[in-house]
Image (cartoon, rainbow, N blue to C red; front, side):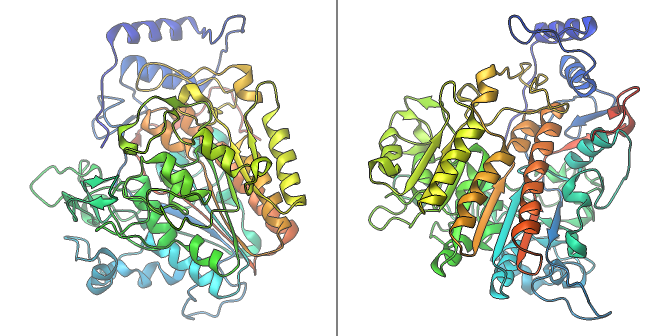
Length: 571
């Protein structure tokens, strides 16, 4: 769990002075940027550590009170799941989201809950539950593949709860267009996929929090951890837009002596969505006892499918790693990358996994001399991918991957697409490695107005990008386009995960400006996917799921405050 920390008073004073002058000098020789409404709101809130328009956490007097995840219900948008003709009263098929929500929710049944959790969570059975579980997304994908779907896309906006989307929609629409439900303003909200779209929401609670492991032995020391999962609707709320009756409950606390439920991390949730198993926080596709299980990517690959993953954050971070890798600890990055690209790893030392056909993400330029979480086999250098491993997988050294990476003075989008087309032409795999090393390897934050000049976050500082950072890195949408070039050329069914991981990073930083920009970037990637389906496939043979792995804990108290004076909606 992330522990909130305060901002030094001097930093607050400096930020307020900058805001009052209306001038922000981001780099030598640059013109100051003015009239950026969301940045101004964010900067003022950080400077004061208080904002009338909203706050992160349960304390409205402290803007940065909470910087970690929550147990909020999470929205799900599906495309290609609703039959064009459905008779009234007809039972939904397993390929429909409705088969897992409403009266079909497993949260209405104690036996069903025992089956997925391995125990009956306290205060979790709800006879009127309308929500499904995160494991049901695996069920939906598996049913789609078995029913003959050829192309399955799982798009994960890491850390994007309903409130995050609402913030971004108000900024985009420049009005408060809705206060509950699916919403409008973004492609994933408004696109109908020819009438085949559905909307629902899910519980993301893990099996447990507090499991301790030995990364070198790949063993679990205390199966069951310290706090079990579950969801109490009477305290957490019936809908994603509900205000929690107990404001401390969604962050694994309580205002009284009632039971507390663990909230998930990204690895536990992603494992559940991709493999259909509940597990502990920090686990990558292993059971609560540490034994391994398969993901849908493994299963479909064995049936002849191609599989890929694209992310805006480092390649082996929790969500992309869970597409395919195994490990008792999500922070064993170099070994997780080895699993993704089919090299021997601590989890598969003798018989490595086959490897994914496409792996594109961040992590470039992030070096470390030591990393205790990665165990005894950590190799000093890049935190996520060793130089030796990168050379081994490169086709120019006899490997299976055409490697595209950030290079000085080279346009990132053009170079990545060039390598993708070459890989497609030669029937090779594709590995892309990008990012800003100064900021742990993620892609640059576009920010709310798209100018890549972020406001300060909870640390009191703001990320600052060079022109090279912007030109030498592709966007998430461009990465997605490159992945589709390679996968399409192989003329086989495929499964692809795309992760807008920077939403989570922005929300951890209590940064409204970066959060909105990250959602905009992710939405662009969704549009790339739906455009591809319309051009190369159809909604009878394609499935797209857009969701998040968990929420954070922002409360928007004054929605109208996000509307800029005298501004119109974004195009």
